[in-house]
Length: 207
Image 1 (tube, rainbow, N blue to C red):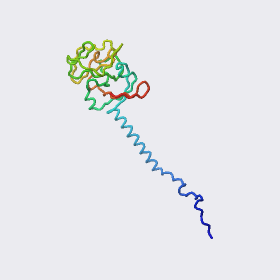
Image 2: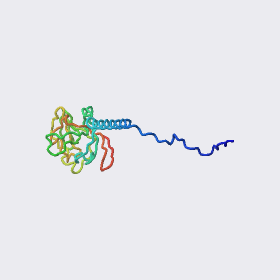
Image 3: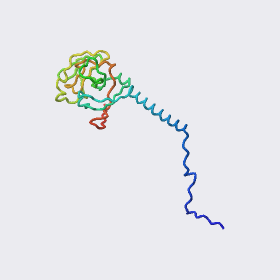
Image 4: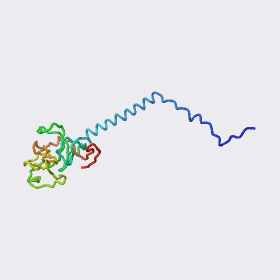
């Protein structure tokens, strides 16, 4: 007479469940490796494309935009063509240094757009005049100390078509269009839209 198995007794392990899977064939491993390589190449190309045509990171090299931008700030610049073609008064832009600017060695500069193509810009006291009329500058911080000295000394300048008159927010300590003239549209790299990094820490400020 056979013994009835005890249902509570532990069962032996399923042999199939503990058998190691055979290693994938070499062709399979090679295919997976090529797939990952393709993913990395595409990601790198996208990153390069974004940097060349859409968005690029820049840092602030000087104090001419204080206190709006601090020295060493890391900012993102929108380089899309339709953004660069829609530059407005008050925008902060990055542009290539013009040949007339002998004051710095940096190849790229950051300033704020004050005068637009076809306008005539000048100053009276502490006020910027466009075509003889004062403009409001809500973006401009309170200027004190070095930033205030000769802050609005703007010679009467007619801005040629396709050119922009730019100034630093720290107007008493900024070499800009008052000294070396206007910026051609073709020299504009893009428009600053966010500061990502300040004083060694993440710091998000949108414009």
